[in-house]
Length: 96
Ligand code: FES
Image 1 (tube, rainbow, N blue to C red):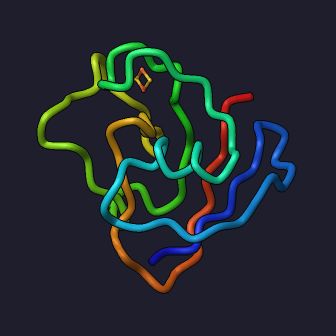
Image 2: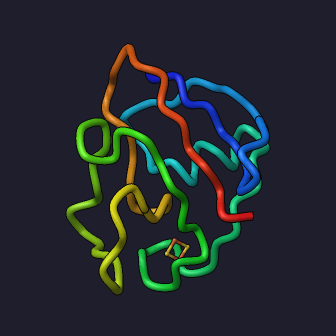
C-alpha cells in the first residue's frame, strides 16, 4: 500500500489515504470520496487529468489504454494510471 496526499489546484490539502497497486487511481479515489472529474475512463478525454509527484518512478499505466495526446511531465490520467507500492508519500494535485 502507498500513502497518497491529495491537494487541490490551490495546493490546499484535501485528504491523505492509502492506495493499492492493483486498481487505477481514479477508482480508488472515488471509493474514498474524492471527486475527480471523469468521462471516458479510458484515457481519451483528459477530464481526470492530475499532476503527481514521482510520476516517473512510482506509477504504472494500463497496458490496454493510451492517453489520447502527449502529457507534460508529472501529468497523469488517473483513470489509466496506478501507483506502485512504495514507502514514500506521493502528492497528487487535482486540476480543480
Ligand atoms: S476519464 Fe477520460 S481520460 Fe480519464
